Length: 279
Length: 283
Image 1 (cartoon, rainbow over the protein chains, first blue to last red):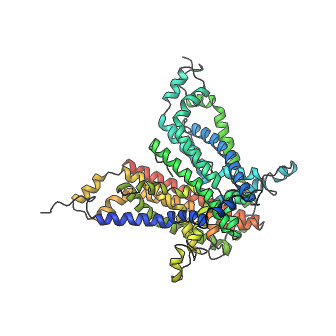
Image 2: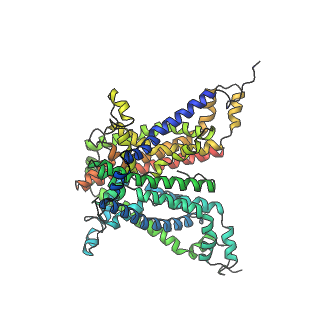
Image 3: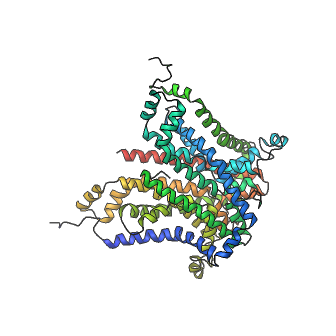
Protein backbone atom coordinates (compact mmCIF):
# COMPACT_ATOMS: atom_id res chain seq x y z
CA UNK A 1 0.00 0.00 0.00
CA UNK A 2 1.18 3.48 -0.91
CA UNK A 3 1.90 5.71 2.02
CA UNK A 4 0.21 9.11 1.99
CA UNK A 5 2.50 11.59 0.31
CA UNK A 6 2.75 15.11 1.61
CA UNK A 7 1.12 17.74 -0.59
CA UNK A 8 3.32 18.94 -3.45
CA UNK A 9 3.35 22.43 -2.03
CA UNK A 10 4.87 21.20 1.20
CA UNK A 11 7.41 18.82 -0.23
CA UNK A 12 10.96 19.69 -1.19
CA UNK A 13 11.38 23.12 0.41
CA UNK A 14 14.86 23.32 -1.11
CA UNK A 15 13.24 23.38 -4.54
CA UNK A 16 11.21 26.47 -3.58
CA UNK A 17 14.30 28.22 -2.27
CA UNK A 18 16.23 27.28 -5.42
CA UNK A 19 13.50 28.63 -7.72
CA UNK A 20 13.21 31.86 -5.71
CA UNK A 21 17.00 32.31 -5.83
CA UNK A 22 17.08 31.76 -9.61
CA UNK A 23 14.22 34.23 -10.13
CA UNK A 24 15.85 36.93 -8.00
CA UNK A 25 19.29 36.32 -9.54
CA UNK A 26 17.86 36.72 -13.05
CA UNK A 27 16.00 39.91 -12.14
CA UNK A 28 19.16 41.24 -10.47
CA UNK A 29 21.33 40.49 -13.47
CA UNK A 30 18.98 41.94 -16.09
CA UNK A 31 17.10 44.68 -14.22
CA UNK A 32 18.36 45.59 -10.75
CA UNK A 33 22.09 45.87 -11.33
CA UNK A 34 21.67 48.10 -14.39
CA UNK A 35 19.20 50.27 -12.42
CA UNK A 36 21.56 50.55 -9.41
CA UNK A 37 24.43 51.33 -11.77
CA UNK A 38 22.65 54.50 -12.96
CA UNK A 39 22.70 55.90 -9.43
CA UNK A 40 26.24 54.68 -8.76
CA UNK A 41 27.69 56.23 -11.91
CA UNK A 42 25.91 59.54 -11.35
CA UNK A 43 26.95 59.98 -7.72
CA UNK A 44 30.21 58.04 -7.22
CA UNK A 45 32.20 61.25 -7.37
CA UNK A 46 29.86 63.06 -5.03
CA UNK A 47 26.86 65.28 -5.53
CA UNK A 48 28.67 68.37 -6.83
CA UNK A 49 29.71 67.06 -10.29
CA UNK A 50 26.14 65.79 -10.68
CA UNK A 51 24.69 69.22 -9.90
CA UNK A 52 27.20 70.96 -12.20
CA UNK A 53 26.12 68.73 -15.08
CA UNK A 54 22.50 69.62 -14.41
CA UNK A 55 23.22 73.33 -14.89
CA UNK A 56 24.57 72.97 -18.44
CA UNK A 57 22.41 75.04 -20.83
CA UNK A 58 22.03 72.19 -23.34
CA UNK A 59 20.82 69.92 -20.59
CA UNK A 60 18.31 72.47 -19.29
CA UNK A 61 16.99 72.98 -22.80
CA UNK A 62 16.61 69.22 -23.24
CA UNK A 63 14.61 69.03 -19.99
CA UNK A 64 12.38 71.88 -21.11
CA UNK A 65 11.82 70.34 -24.53
CA UNK A 66 11.00 66.93 -23.04
CA UNK A 67 8.34 68.47 -20.78
CA UNK A 68 6.97 70.63 -23.62
CA UNK A 69 6.58 67.52 -25.81
CA UNK A 70 4.73 65.63 -23.08
CA UNK A 71 2.57 68.67 -22.39
CA UNK A 72 1.33 68.70 -26.00
CA UNK A 73 1.24 64.95 -26.70
CA UNK A 74 -0.41 63.66 -23.52
CA UNK A 75 -3.60 65.79 -23.83
CA UNK A 76 -3.83 65.00 -27.57
CA UNK A 77 -3.60 61.26 -27.03
CA UNK A 78 -5.89 61.42 -23.98
CA UNK A 79 -8.70 63.07 -25.97
CA UNK A 80 -8.22 60.61 -28.82
CA UNK A 81 -7.99 57.65 -26.43
CA UNK A 82 -11.23 58.61 -24.69
CA UNK A 83 -13.07 59.06 -28.00
CA UNK A 84 -11.76 55.79 -29.41
CA UNK A 85 -12.52 53.91 -26.18
CA UNK A 86 -16.07 55.26 -26.14
CA UNK A 87 -16.61 54.42 -29.80
CA UNK A 88 -15.33 50.87 -29.34
CA UNK A 89 -16.70 49.98 -25.91
CA UNK A 90 -20.18 51.44 -26.40
CA UNK A 91 -20.94 50.14 -29.87
CA UNK A 92 -21.13 46.90 -31.76
CA UNK A 93 -20.26 47.28 -35.42
CA UNK A 94 -18.57 45.24 -38.13
CA UNK A 95 -14.78 45.64 -38.06
CA UNK A 96 -14.70 46.37 -34.33
CA UNK A 97 -11.91 43.86 -33.64
CA UNK A 98 -10.02 45.20 -36.65
CA UNK A 99 -10.27 48.75 -35.27
CA UNK A 100 -8.86 47.50 -31.95
CA UNK A 101 -5.88 45.96 -33.75
CA UNK A 102 -5.35 49.14 -35.77
CA UNK A 103 -5.17 51.20 -32.58
CA UNK A 104 -2.53 48.77 -31.27
CA UNK A 105 -0.41 49.07 -34.44
CA UNK A 106 2.08 51.65 -33.09
CA UNK A 107 3.22 49.08 -30.51
CA UNK A 108 4.33 46.67 -33.21
CA UNK A 109 5.92 49.16 -35.59
CA UNK A 110 9.59 49.90 -34.92
CA UNK A 111 9.95 53.53 -33.75
CA UNK A 112 12.59 54.14 -36.42
CA UNK A 113 10.15 53.01 -39.11
CA UNK A 114 7.53 55.31 -37.55
CA UNK A 115 9.94 58.23 -37.81
CA UNK A 116 10.77 57.25 -41.39
CA UNK A 117 7.06 57.31 -42.31
CA UNK A 118 6.74 60.85 -40.97
CA UNK A 119 9.80 61.93 -42.99
CA UNK A 120 8.14 60.47 -46.11
CA UNK A 121 4.97 62.51 -45.47
CA UNK A 122 6.31 65.81 -44.11
CA UNK A 123 9.99 65.82 -45.20
CA UNK A 124 11.38 67.93 -48.02
CA UNK A 125 10.79 65.18 -50.62
CA UNK A 126 7.70 63.87 -48.86
CA UNK A 127 4.04 63.96 -49.87
CA UNK A 128 3.37 67.32 -48.24
CA UNK A 129 6.96 68.58 -48.51
CA UNK A 130 6.49 71.07 -51.37
CA UNK A 131 3.27 72.42 -49.94
CA UNK A 132 4.78 72.90 -46.46
CA UNK A 133 7.84 74.58 -47.95
CA UNK A 134 5.66 77.03 -49.88
CA UNK A 135 3.91 77.93 -46.64
CA UNK A 136 7.30 78.10 -44.85
CA UNK A 137 6.25 75.52 -42.24
CA UNK A 138 8.93 73.19 -40.91
CA UNK A 139 7.72 69.89 -39.51
CA UNK A 140 10.71 67.58 -39.84
CA UNK A 141 13.77 68.69 -37.82
CA UNK A 142 11.57 70.85 -35.63
CA UNK A 143 9.00 70.68 -32.83
CA UNK A 144 5.84 69.71 -34.81
CA UNK A 145 7.57 66.63 -36.22
CA UNK A 146 8.74 65.61 -32.77
CA UNK A 147 5.15 65.98 -31.51
CA UNK A 148 3.87 63.75 -34.33
CA UNK A 149 6.56 61.11 -33.69
CA UNK A 150 5.92 61.08 -29.94
CA UNK A 151 2.15 60.99 -30.41
CA UNK A 152 2.52 58.06 -32.83
CA UNK A 153 4.46 55.81 -30.45
CA UNK A 154 2.26 56.58 -27.40
CA UNK A 155 -1.09 56.51 -29.22
CA UNK A 156 -2.60 53.22 -27.95
CA UNK A 157 -2.13 53.53 -24.16
CA UNK A 158 -5.24 55.50 -23.07
CA UNK A 159 -7.70 53.62 -25.31
CA UNK A 160 -6.25 50.25 -24.21
CA UNK A 161 -6.64 50.99 -20.52
CA UNK A 162 -10.06 52.69 -20.75
CA UNK A 163 -11.86 50.18 -23.01
CA UNK A 164 -11.91 47.30 -20.46
CA UNK A 165 -13.06 49.66 -17.68
CA UNK A 166 -15.87 51.08 -19.85
CA UNK A 167 -16.96 47.56 -20.77
CA UNK A 168 -16.98 46.46 -17.16
CA UNK A 169 -19.05 49.33 -15.73
CA UNK A 170 -21.74 48.84 -18.38
CA UNK A 171 -24.30 51.43 -19.46
CA UNK A 172 -26.89 51.30 -16.66
CA UNK A 173 -25.75 54.39 -14.79
CA UNK A 174 -25.33 56.38 -17.99
CA UNK A 175 -28.81 55.43 -19.14
CA UNK A 176 -30.25 56.32 -15.74
CA UNK A 177 -28.61 59.76 -15.94
CA UNK A 178 -30.07 60.29 -19.41
CA UNK A 179 -33.52 59.21 -18.25
CA UNK A 180 -33.28 61.78 -15.49
CA UNK A 181 -32.66 64.44 -18.11
CA UNK A 182 -28.89 64.82 -18.19
CA UNK A 183 -27.43 65.74 -21.56
CA UNK A 184 -24.45 63.96 -23.13
CA UNK A 185 -21.86 66.26 -21.57
CA UNK A 186 -23.36 66.07 -18.10
CA UNK A 187 -23.54 62.29 -18.36
CA UNK A 188 -19.91 62.11 -19.41
CA UNK A 189 -18.52 64.49 -16.77
CA UNK A 190 -20.65 63.38 -13.82
CA UNK A 191 -21.20 59.67 -14.45
CA UNK A 192 -18.77 58.16 -16.95
CA UNK A 193 -15.59 60.07 -16.09
CA UNK A 194 -15.72 59.39 -12.32
CA UNK A 195 -16.23 55.70 -13.09
CA UNK A 196 -13.29 55.37 -15.44
CA UNK A 197 -10.92 57.76 -13.64
CA UNK A 198 -8.40 55.16 -12.42
CA UNK A 199 -8.16 53.39 -15.75
CA UNK A 200 -7.84 56.75 -17.48
CA UNK A 201 -5.12 57.89 -15.07
CA UNK A 202 -3.25 54.63 -15.69
CA UNK A 203 -3.38 55.20 -19.45
CA UNK A 204 -2.24 58.82 -19.06
CA UNK A 205 0.64 57.70 -16.84
CA UNK A 206 1.89 55.19 -19.42
CA UNK A 207 1.43 57.73 -22.24
CA UNK A 208 3.51 60.25 -20.32
CA UNK A 209 6.31 57.79 -19.53
CA UNK A 210 6.56 56.79 -23.18
CA UNK A 211 6.28 60.39 -24.41
CA UNK A 212 9.11 61.59 -22.19
CA UNK A 213 11.30 58.56 -22.84
CA UNK A 214 10.91 58.02 -26.59
CA UNK A 215 14.18 57.78 -28.44
CA UNK A 216 14.06 56.16 -31.89
CA UNK A 217 11.15 57.95 -33.54
CA UNK A 218 12.21 61.32 -32.17
CA UNK A 219 15.84 60.72 -33.17
CA UNK A 220 14.76 60.24 -36.80
CA UNK A 221 12.58 63.35 -37.12
CA UNK A 222 14.38 65.79 -34.80
CA UNK A 223 17.83 66.05 -36.36
CA UNK A 224 19.18 65.86 -32.79
CA UNK A 225 20.69 69.36 -32.55
CA UNK A 226 21.91 70.14 -29.02
CA UNK A 227 20.12 73.13 -27.52
CA UNK A 228 17.50 73.09 -30.28
CA UNK A 229 15.82 69.77 -31.00
CA UNK A 230 17.47 67.53 -28.42
CA UNK A 231 15.23 65.87 -25.84
CA UNK A 232 16.56 64.22 -22.67
CA UNK A 233 16.85 60.69 -24.12
CA UNK A 234 18.69 62.11 -27.14
CA UNK A 235 20.93 64.11 -24.79
CA UNK A 236 21.84 60.89 -22.94
CA UNK A 237 22.95 59.14 -26.13
CA UNK A 238 24.74 62.19 -27.52
CA UNK A 239 26.70 62.79 -24.31
CA UNK A 240 27.66 59.10 -24.12
CA UNK A 241 28.82 59.03 -27.74
CA UNK A 242 31.01 62.08 -27.08
CA UNK A 243 32.64 60.35 -24.08
CA UNK A 244 30.91 62.73 -21.70
CA UNK A 245 29.76 59.86 -19.51
CA UNK A 246 29.23 61.99 -16.40
CA UNK A 247 26.64 64.23 -17.99
CA UNK A 248 25.02 61.24 -19.74
CA UNK A 249 24.47 59.66 -16.31
CA UNK A 250 23.27 62.93 -14.76
CA UNK A 251 20.54 63.07 -17.40
CA UNK A 252 19.91 59.33 -16.98
CA UNK A 253 19.18 59.88 -13.28
CA UNK A 254 16.50 62.43 -14.15
CA UNK A 255 14.90 59.98 -16.60
CA UNK A 256 15.30 57.20 -14.04
CA UNK A 257 13.39 59.37 -11.58
CA UNK A 258 10.59 59.59 -14.14
CA UNK A 259 10.57 55.78 -14.34
CA UNK A 260 10.51 55.50 -10.55
CA UNK A 261 7.56 57.90 -10.21
CA UNK A 262 5.76 55.99 -12.98
CA UNK A 263 6.28 52.64 -11.24
CA UNK A 264 5.20 53.97 -7.83
CA UNK A 265 2.01 55.60 -9.15
CA UNK A 266 1.33 52.44 -11.19
CA UNK A 267 1.65 50.31 -8.07
CA UNK A 268 -0.69 52.64 -6.13
CA UNK A 269 -3.26 52.52 -8.93
CA UNK A 270 -3.04 48.73 -9.14
CA UNK A 271 -3.60 48.36 -5.40
CA UNK A 272 -6.52 50.81 -5.54
CA UNK A 273 -8.29 49.05 -8.37
CA UNK A 274 -7.03 45.53 -7.83
CA UNK A 275 -6.42 45.05 -11.54
CA UNK A 276 -3.26 44.09 -13.34
CA UNK A 277 -3.64 45.57 -16.80
CA UNK A 278 -2.60 43.59 -19.83
CA UNK A 279 0.88 44.17 -21.24
CA UNK B 1 -42.62 56.67 -26.46
CA UNK B 2 -41.37 57.87 -29.81
CA UNK B 3 -37.90 57.03 -30.93
CA UNK B 4 -37.05 60.66 -31.57
CA UNK B 5 -37.78 61.74 -28.01
CA UNK B 6 -34.54 63.22 -26.58
CA UNK B 7 -34.59 61.35 -23.27
CA UNK B 8 -35.42 57.96 -24.71
CA UNK B 9 -33.38 55.54 -22.55
CA UNK B 10 -33.29 52.66 -25.00
CA UNK B 11 -30.78 53.83 -27.58
CA UNK B 12 -30.05 51.80 -30.65
CA UNK B 13 -26.39 51.84 -31.71
CA UNK B 14 -27.26 53.87 -34.79
CA UNK B 15 -29.01 56.43 -32.64
CA UNK B 16 -26.07 56.71 -30.27
CA UNK B 17 -23.74 57.16 -33.16
CA UNK B 18 -25.84 60.02 -34.44
CA UNK B 19 -25.90 61.63 -31.01
CA UNK B 20 -22.14 61.48 -30.70
CA UNK B 21 -20.91 61.99 -34.23
CA UNK B 22 -17.91 64.07 -33.18
CA UNK B 23 -16.56 61.18 -31.10
CA UNK B 24 -16.43 59.12 -34.27
CA UNK B 25 -15.09 62.00 -36.29
CA UNK B 26 -12.19 62.59 -33.88
CA UNK B 27 -11.37 58.88 -33.71
CA UNK B 28 -11.38 58.36 -37.47
CA UNK B 29 -9.65 61.66 -38.27
CA UNK B 30 -6.86 61.05 -35.75
CA UNK B 31 -6.26 57.50 -36.96
CA UNK B 32 -6.19 58.70 -40.57
CA UNK B 33 -3.66 61.46 -39.88
CA UNK B 34 -1.51 59.57 -37.40
CA UNK B 35 -1.52 56.07 -38.87
CA UNK B 36 -3.13 55.68 -42.28
CA UNK B 37 -1.36 58.55 -44.09
CA UNK B 38 2.16 57.70 -42.81
CA UNK B 39 1.74 53.98 -43.56
CA UNK B 40 0.36 54.77 -47.01
CA UNK B 41 3.31 57.10 -47.66
CA UNK B 42 5.77 54.34 -46.77
CA UNK B 43 4.04 51.68 -48.86
CA UNK B 44 3.55 53.91 -51.91
CA UNK B 45 7.17 55.06 -51.81
CA UNK B 46 8.34 51.45 -51.49
CA UNK B 47 6.12 50.22 -54.32
CA UNK B 48 7.37 52.97 -56.63
CA UNK B 49 10.70 51.14 -56.71
CA UNK B 50 9.19 48.26 -58.68
CA UNK B 51 9.26 44.62 -57.55
CA UNK B 52 12.65 43.70 -59.07
CA UNK B 53 14.49 46.67 -57.66
CA UNK B 54 12.65 46.32 -54.33
CA UNK B 55 13.85 42.73 -54.07
CA UNK B 56 17.43 43.71 -54.95
CA UNK B 57 17.60 46.39 -52.25
CA UNK B 58 15.71 44.35 -49.67
CA UNK B 59 18.09 41.39 -50.10
CA UNK B 60 21.43 43.21 -50.23
CA UNK B 61 24.07 41.36 -48.23
CA UNK B 62 24.19 44.05 -45.54
CA UNK B 63 20.39 43.96 -45.17
CA UNK B 64 20.25 40.16 -45.02
CA UNK B 65 22.85 40.09 -42.27
CA UNK B 66 20.96 42.84 -40.38
CA UNK B 67 17.73 40.79 -40.56
CA UNK B 68 19.60 37.75 -39.33
CA UNK B 69 21.14 39.62 -36.37
CA UNK B 70 17.76 41.21 -35.53
CA UNK B 71 15.40 38.27 -35.87
CA UNK B 72 17.63 35.45 -34.61
CA UNK B 73 18.88 37.43 -31.60
CA UNK B 74 15.36 38.64 -30.80
CA UNK B 75 14.05 35.07 -31.01
CA UNK B 76 16.78 33.77 -28.69
CA UNK B 77 16.15 36.62 -26.21
CA UNK B 78 12.38 36.03 -26.32
CA UNK B 79 12.82 32.28 -25.75
CA UNK B 80 15.22 32.80 -22.82
CA UNK B 81 12.66 35.18 -21.33
CA UNK B 82 10.00 32.55 -22.01
CA UNK B 83 11.81 30.15 -19.68
CA UNK B 84 12.87 32.63 -17.01
CA UNK B 85 9.64 34.63 -17.28
CA UNK B 86 7.55 31.53 -16.60
CA UNK B 87 9.80 30.67 -13.65
CA UNK B 88 9.55 34.21 -12.23
CA UNK B 89 5.76 34.29 -12.72
CA UNK B 90 5.51 30.94 -10.91
CA UNK B 91 7.65 32.17 -8.01
CA UNK B 92 5.70 35.45 -7.75
CA UNK B 93 2.30 33.73 -7.78
CA UNK B 94 2.93 30.58 -5.77
CA UNK B 95 5.57 31.36 -3.15
CA UNK B 96 5.86 34.04 -0.52
CA UNK B 97 9.23 35.49 0.38
CA UNK B 98 10.53 38.78 1.75
CA UNK B 99 10.53 41.60 -0.82
CA UNK B 100 8.05 39.84 -3.10
CA UNK B 101 6.00 42.99 -3.76
CA UNK B 102 9.18 44.89 -4.61
CA UNK B 103 10.31 42.27 -7.13
CA UNK B 104 6.81 42.15 -8.62
CA UNK B 105 6.78 45.94 -9.11
CA UNK B 106 10.33 46.00 -10.50
CA UNK B 107 9.33 43.67 -13.36
CA UNK B 108 7.67 46.65 -15.08
CA UNK B 109 10.90 48.66 -15.08
CA UNK B 110 11.57 48.09 -18.81
CA UNK B 111 8.15 49.64 -19.59
CA UNK B 112 8.95 52.72 -17.51
CA UNK B 113 12.68 53.29 -18.07
CA UNK B 114 13.52 55.17 -21.29
CA UNK B 115 15.40 52.86 -23.63
CA UNK B 116 18.34 55.26 -23.99
CA UNK B 117 18.96 54.96 -20.23
CA UNK B 118 18.67 51.18 -20.46
CA UNK B 119 21.24 51.10 -23.25
CA UNK B 120 23.59 53.44 -21.39
CA UNK B 121 23.59 51.51 -18.13
CA UNK B 122 23.66 48.05 -19.78
CA UNK B 123 26.64 49.17 -21.88
CA UNK B 124 28.44 50.16 -18.65
CA UNK B 125 27.52 47.12 -16.54
CA UNK B 126 28.35 44.67 -19.35
CA UNK B 127 31.50 46.46 -20.60
CA UNK B 128 34.98 45.09 -19.87
CA UNK B 129 35.28 47.29 -16.77
CA UNK B 130 31.67 46.92 -15.67
CA UNK B 131 30.23 44.98 -12.75
CA UNK B 132 29.27 41.93 -14.83
CA UNK B 133 31.45 42.43 -17.90
CA UNK B 134 34.68 42.41 -15.85
CA UNK B 135 33.79 38.95 -14.51
CA UNK B 136 33.45 37.57 -18.04
CA UNK B 137 36.37 39.41 -19.66
CA UNK B 138 39.03 36.96 -18.33
CA UNK B 139 37.23 34.20 -20.26
CA UNK B 140 37.47 36.22 -23.46
CA UNK B 141 33.74 36.95 -23.51
CA UNK B 142 32.92 40.48 -24.61
CA UNK B 143 29.31 41.45 -24.14
CA UNK B 144 28.98 45.20 -24.72
CA UNK B 145 29.72 46.31 -28.32
CA UNK B 146 29.15 42.82 -29.70
CA UNK B 147 26.18 40.70 -30.67
CA UNK B 148 25.96 39.54 -27.05
CA UNK B 149 25.25 43.15 -26.12
CA UNK B 150 22.35 43.22 -28.59
CA UNK B 151 21.01 40.10 -26.90
CA UNK B 152 21.35 41.59 -23.40
CA UNK B 153 19.46 44.75 -24.44
CA UNK B 154 16.74 42.60 -26.02
CA UNK B 155 16.53 40.48 -22.85
CA UNK B 156 16.04 43.66 -20.82
CA UNK B 157 13.28 45.21 -22.91
CA UNK B 158 11.31 42.00 -23.53
CA UNK B 159 11.48 40.70 -19.95
CA UNK B 160 8.06 41.85 -18.62
CA UNK B 161 5.89 40.35 -21.36
CA UNK B 162 5.99 36.64 -20.48
CA UNK B 163 5.74 37.34 -16.75
CA UNK B 164 2.70 39.60 -17.21
CA UNK B 165 0.89 37.20 -19.56
CA UNK B 166 1.54 34.09 -17.44
CA UNK B 167 0.77 35.61 -14.01
CA UNK B 168 -3.03 35.97 -14.44
CA UNK B 169 -3.39 32.45 -15.88
CA UNK B 170 -1.39 30.97 -13.00
CA UNK B 171 -3.49 32.88 -10.47
CA UNK B 172 -6.68 31.49 -12.02
CA UNK B 173 -5.34 27.93 -12.23
CA UNK B 174 -6.65 25.81 -9.45
CA UNK B 175 -4.26 23.95 -7.26
CA UNK B 176 -6.74 21.06 -6.95
CA UNK B 177 -5.75 19.65 -10.32
CA UNK B 178 -2.08 19.50 -9.35
CA UNK B 179 -2.91 17.98 -5.99
CA UNK B 180 -5.15 15.42 -7.72
CA UNK B 181 -2.33 14.46 -10.08
CA UNK B 182 0.01 14.27 -7.14
CA UNK B 183 -2.26 12.11 -5.00
CA UNK B 184 -2.81 9.79 -7.97
CA UNK B 185 0.92 9.12 -7.85
CA UNK B 186 2.37 11.51 -10.41
CA UNK B 187 5.92 12.62 -9.77
CA UNK B 188 6.98 16.28 -9.64
CA UNK B 189 8.21 16.09 -13.22
CA UNK B 190 5.02 14.46 -14.49
CA UNK B 191 2.84 16.97 -12.65
CA UNK B 192 4.80 19.85 -14.18
CA UNK B 193 4.97 18.58 -17.78
CA UNK B 194 1.49 17.04 -18.02
CA UNK B 195 -0.68 19.12 -15.69
CA UNK B 196 0.82 22.55 -15.06
CA UNK B 197 2.55 23.40 -18.34
CA UNK B 198 -0.15 22.65 -21.00
CA UNK B 199 -2.70 25.25 -19.81
CA UNK B 200 0.10 27.83 -19.46
CA UNK B 201 1.38 27.26 -23.00
CA UNK B 202 -0.89 29.79 -24.84
CA UNK B 203 0.04 32.50 -22.32
CA UNK B 204 3.75 31.68 -22.50
CA UNK B 205 3.76 31.71 -26.31
CA UNK B 206 1.77 34.97 -26.40
CA UNK B 207 4.32 36.52 -24.04
CA UNK B 208 7.21 35.20 -26.14
CA UNK B 209 5.62 36.62 -29.32
CA UNK B 210 4.97 40.01 -27.67
CA UNK B 211 8.55 40.12 -26.38
CA UNK B 212 9.91 39.06 -29.78
CA UNK B 213 7.88 41.80 -31.49
CA UNK B 214 9.19 44.39 -29.02
CA UNK B 215 12.80 43.20 -29.39
CA UNK B 216 12.64 43.23 -33.21
CA UNK B 217 11.58 46.89 -33.24
CA UNK B 218 13.92 48.05 -30.48
CA UNK B 219 16.36 50.82 -31.36
CA UNK B 220 17.32 53.14 -28.48
CA UNK B 221 19.07 50.71 -26.15
CA UNK B 222 20.68 48.65 -28.92
CA UNK B 223 22.18 51.56 -30.84
CA UNK B 224 24.07 52.40 -27.62
CA UNK B 225 25.20 48.94 -26.48
CA UNK B 226 26.08 47.64 -29.96
CA UNK B 227 29.10 48.70 -32.00
CA UNK B 228 26.74 48.85 -35.04
CA UNK B 229 29.29 47.14 -37.28
CA UNK B 230 27.78 45.71 -40.48
CA UNK B 231 27.79 41.87 -40.67
CA UNK B 232 28.51 41.67 -36.92
CA UNK B 233 26.05 43.44 -34.65
CA UNK B 234 24.16 45.82 -36.92
CA UNK B 235 20.39 45.42 -36.49
CA UNK B 236 17.71 46.30 -39.04
CA UNK B 237 16.36 49.45 -37.31
CA UNK B 238 19.89 50.87 -37.01
CA UNK B 239 20.44 50.10 -40.71
CA UNK B 240 17.26 52.07 -41.56
CA UNK B 241 18.48 54.93 -39.36
CA UNK B 242 21.95 54.95 -40.93
CA UNK B 243 20.47 54.88 -44.45
CA UNK B 244 18.36 57.93 -43.57
CA UNK B 245 21.41 59.72 -42.18
CA UNK B 246 23.16 59.12 -45.52
CA UNK B 247 20.05 60.43 -47.36
CA UNK B 248 19.56 56.99 -48.93
CA UNK B 249 15.77 57.28 -48.64
CA UNK B 250 15.18 54.40 -51.01
CA UNK B 251 17.11 51.84 -48.97
CA UNK B 252 15.56 53.17 -45.74
CA UNK B 253 12.07 52.92 -47.22
CA UNK B 254 12.50 49.42 -48.60
CA UNK B 255 14.14 47.93 -45.50
CA UNK B 256 11.61 49.81 -43.35
CA UNK B 257 8.79 48.26 -45.39
CA UNK B 258 10.22 44.77 -44.86
CA UNK B 259 10.24 45.45 -41.11
CA UNK B 260 6.68 46.81 -41.22
CA UNK B 261 5.43 43.69 -43.03
CA UNK B 262 7.20 41.43 -40.54
CA UNK B 263 5.64 43.33 -37.60
CA UNK B 264 2.20 42.97 -39.16
CA UNK B 265 2.78 39.22 -39.53
CA UNK B 266 3.85 38.97 -35.88
CA UNK B 267 0.79 40.98 -34.80
CA UNK B 268 -1.42 38.54 -36.70
CA UNK B 269 0.32 35.61 -35.00
CA UNK B 270 -0.18 37.23 -31.57
CA UNK B 271 -3.91 37.63 -32.28
CA UNK B 272 -4.13 33.93 -33.20
CA UNK B 273 -2.27 32.96 -30.01
CA UNK B 274 -4.57 35.10 -27.88
CA UNK B 275 -7.65 33.56 -29.50
CA UNK B 276 -6.19 30.12 -28.74
CA UNK B 277 -5.59 31.19 -25.14
CA UNK B 278 -9.20 32.34 -24.74
CA UNK B 279 -10.47 29.02 -26.13
CA UNK B 280 -8.22 27.21 -23.69
CA UNK B 281 -9.56 29.27 -20.78
CA UNK B 282 -13.16 28.41 -21.68
CA UNK B 283 -12.61 24.63 -21.46
